[in-house]
Length: 277
Image (cartoon, rainbow, N blue to C red; front, side, top):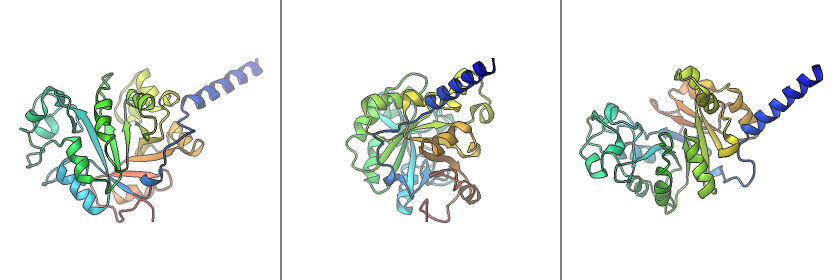
């Protein structure tokens, strides 16, 4: 009986390790992304003239030498725009979702009462023009991955360094099937603890049990839960690139140096622009 139990345990461990295994072969070059700190939604101040995901915030990040993390979703007329929330209420004070309005209609709204408007992905890329590396988060709500091919059509013509990431594994699956050469990352969190979300789906997402299907090149995880077993195995056993979000103080940045490779920050100005000195 003891032997049977040990066999079952061994099989379960092997299956678990296979489930969380990221891409191990034919990996994109990660070197262009390293040694840089990434400004979360640009170098923003939601109480000033450069709110999150605004062209002003992006320009400030580029001028300061930081990489940029940004969020992309679609307007009603299928224009890739840069905006984090699916709903407009928090940032624009408007009812409805981004996808309820055309791009032109969205231009009637401002970000946090500033003069800044919701940018198009194409305009943002023209401004950055390859000067800093980009982490592009694709906002996929449930099963609609239409943002992937439409954003990718624009990104294909961009000559700068960029990678994509998403909380939704379906976005990574799309990129694996259609643009396998692009560096892709799985965003995750300790959903049960941080968000209070329960159920099998969130258990699978928290522990990255779909890595065997998505084959991410990096794991971007809430830095407060750096000790999560699956995340640590991906970094230490599989040598997968580890990205921390979102660092909000120099103390947090210094504390997580040994646990992550890349750092996404906001709410403070790091003492250095480079990720490694």
